[in-house]
Image 1 (tube, helix red, strand yellow):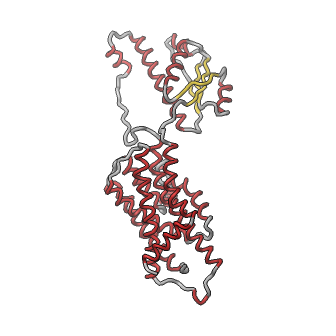
Image 2 (cartoon, one colour):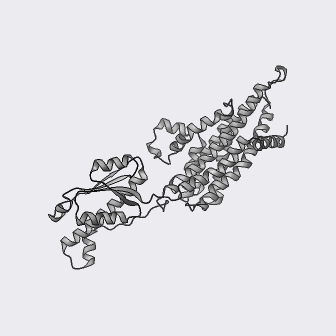
Length: 384
């Protein structure tokens, strides 16, 4: 068979198999839209909070009014005790408690320090962040107002200097929205490419292995390919996969972020150069892994159980410096690790190719390693 025959055969295997078509086309098209739509709000709003007010004072009511006016939280319930409020949180009716002790207003009148307590459901970090930031902002504002009354200054400038002797400006870098979508989506989008390719290629290999078991070659016809034939076969398969996933990659990394308004600081030429070894390494990695697939369905289990660990190992959701060395070594085996790290820097930080040189070089190294292994696998595999 010629080089073009292998390309045509592989494209036929892709578009005639509904399962493979699902993973090669539908999954890369649909999953980015679903994930982006879910995280499009970026931050949580109107997080329900339970009020427990044992103070029943004008100051506690003012604090509650300002706290409820925040766009991030909403005081939707009121309880008579902490135990009752905890029961509401346990039933999922709220995510936090705003508690005022009996001496809240009395201590302030005595020029003593008053306390307001915040209890948060720590199982949801975004809700915890919304409640804590809102309470801290209100506490700082009311504390500054009380300080101004006690100082008795004559001008607003004196009040500003007294309450804020050190002024600061908070300037978010890169993720200017401070949203969860801009934080996690670039990593997820790159990982989808590797996992979708692994699923599709593994399913094709599993199908062919099942057919070989049903219709085995006669012993006299069995034999290994020559190195030249193996190289032509692998090249044809690779080109077929690249033709499909080049389009999917453009859709995932360029079009989807623009549809949902995510931060996009990529430079087209640098992105093309960076993703060339990423796609190649994913292709050869998928071909290598497919040699272990005996049944077409078995590859699904592998992908399901590895997707979340691979996202964590990339260093995007947990600092890379805090990942144990042994696990970092495991992460180096997967193209997604360096693809995610490089793309996040290029997309969210505006990095150029020269700024992601370590990741770029590692992708070429993985391309070479998995390319050699895939060639050996292809040579040893019985011709179809």
